Image 1 (cartoon, rainbow, N blue to C red):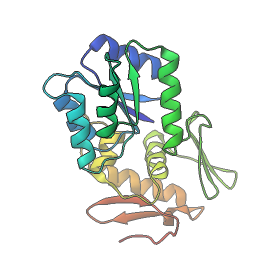
Image 2 (tube, helix red, strand yellow):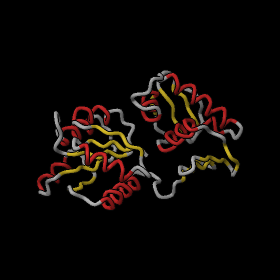
Image 3 (cartoon, rainbow, N blue to C red):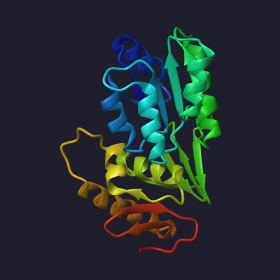
Image 4 (cartoon, rainbow, N blue to C red):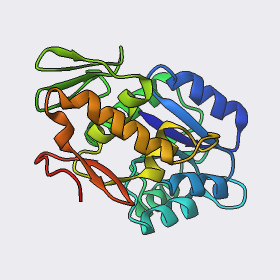
Length: 228
């Protein structure tokens, strides 16, 4: 699971990263404009968003994100405990609210609850699709009880497709999610890994469920229609 932390207090941001590192991969932004740019990539499972930010406040960031129909769950952070601030946050699309200072355990519990509500599988560490099982903790895959050998990035790609089943993921989204914004390679690497992933799934017939949308991206689908 991938979390975007938009918080200008670098000490607090690092503390959040340390707190959730065992369950989440984190990306940090330290002002509103940078946070908005990253949030617009729509590759995160949860966004932790501070209200008081340089260049653009958290309310403005969230409002712009929601106007683009990006539904990523958002926890807003604030030093304010006034009801008006909470109402404004919920009105622009916040899913939860956490007042600073907060306890480590409270943050973890709220993240876990948010992931469960959005359909994630944080506790079980296992994702399933038909007879396919992905063990997130030990990065293993099996179909009908038989091990499927996948390298690290192939596993990550299959996990990303599975957690967004029946949703088209663009090559750019996949690249940013798995290889990262600062990677030296290009989006063509996505095609290579998608092709190799299909080869590894072909023995069990599960390659048919990864649909290619030429020039756009990929989707894991229930009906196995192939390419479009």
